[in-house]
Length: 87
Image 1 (cartoon, one colour):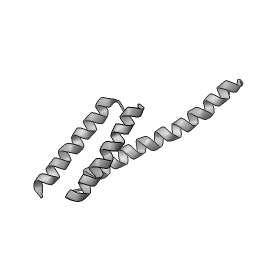
Image 2 (cartoon, helix red, strand yellow):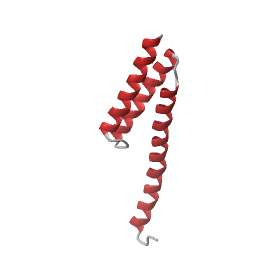
Image 3 (cartoon, helix red, strand yellow):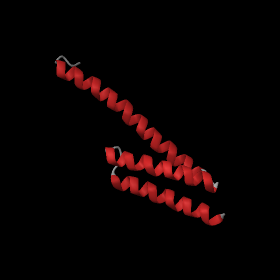
Image 4 (cartoon, helix red, strand yellow):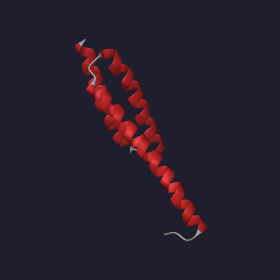
């Protein structure tokens, strides 16, 4: 266990960051799954915008690698195009 004041503070701050990172990762996974699971045109378009926003924010903040975010957005775009072409 830490004994220095700065080490104790580092433990507290890393716990806060861990919670925030976990929450963000969960949000990314949830919004991507919801978008890919939906087949209604209007709903997919709404969820797509939200998913792209969350992915961009995650990549900007360093939660995701920029290429990972781009790959996920590409998959979502393909799904969106498929759904809108069917209707």
